[in-house]
Each structure stands twice: as structure tokens, then as C-alpha cells.
Length: 110
Image (cartoon, rainbow, N blue to C red; front, side, top):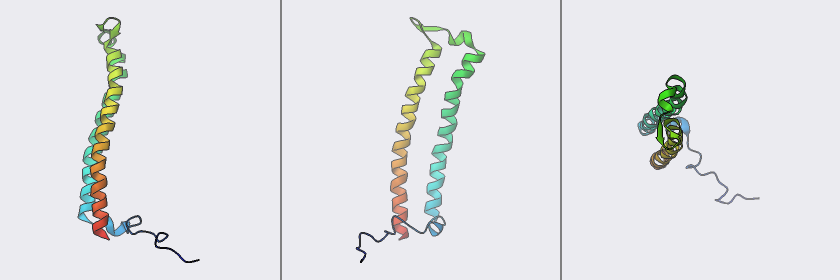
């Protein structure tokens, strides 16, 4: 049984990762990713953990009514859904740029 050209592994799908990681462009891409991911993670975790901390230490503040029976704690809890969607949207936009950069680096490596 002979192999067709479609069966052969593509160099773009299986690059030499050891040589690729030595390239300055690849290292710069990793730095750009880290510069977005680490601060985003820290911000998101602080925002997420702020609700139980605020409710635990300042319950009277969090019981303050904002609109009818809706208090600050409910508003803050609902804002976490919004924040998750915003963070996901931002990540998808930035990750698309990283994917293009990675593809260009791999293509230039071939």
C-alpha cells in the first residue's frame, strides 16, 4: 500500500519544537502571552474572591439595598457573570493574535 501525499505528516503540524523554542520570536510570543495571562488571572481571582471576603468582613455594607430588595452583594455576584464574559471575550481576541503569530513563526521555521 503506497502513501499518498495526504498521508504524509505536514511539517507545519509537527515542527521541530526544540529548535523552534530557541527562536527569539517564539520566546517573545511566550512573553506576550504571559504579560496578558498572569495579570488577567490575578485580577479575575481577586474579583472573584472579593465577594466572600466582603460578605464575611463587611456584611452591613453588602446588605445595603440598591434597588428594591436587591443589595450590593447581589449586584456584585451578578457582576461576576459579566466579568467572566468580558474576560473570555478579551482572551479570545488576544489568543487569535497569538495564533496568527505562532503560525507565522512556525511557517518561517520550515
